[in-house]
Length: 149
Image 1 (cartoon, one colour):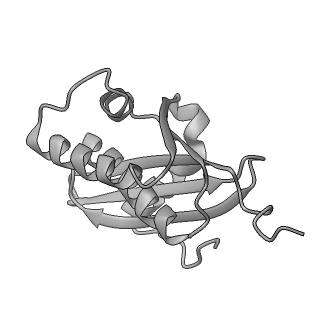
Image 2 (image 1 turned 120 degrees about the vertical axis):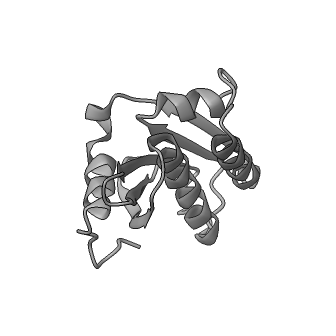
């Protein structure tokens, strides 16, 4: 039996960022599913104050930073986000003009080159409910103590 046959060929990643400007914090979340849709990892954390778009990029960056530590080398990663701005910028449909977004885009591009194929997909918030809830909980200081790994 080939020990590598159980490694996923692709990951489906949902990310979201939430901001609480009045409190000066943001929440980031990422959920990783295998090609069958089973959740295999998730992460969320509270972070510094960011704009909404910066938080969306930060959540995607967090996801890819964690993905590279898994050492499973999937062929494909499909990232789903309710941030049309980030998805369009990462797909080449729009340019990042704000300096902070340009910097975040360069950092994210540096991370995704480690994977064979990465695609970005925009989805409505209603189809991103778990990532949205985790990001909002993190922003509100309700970060779960346990992570699925």
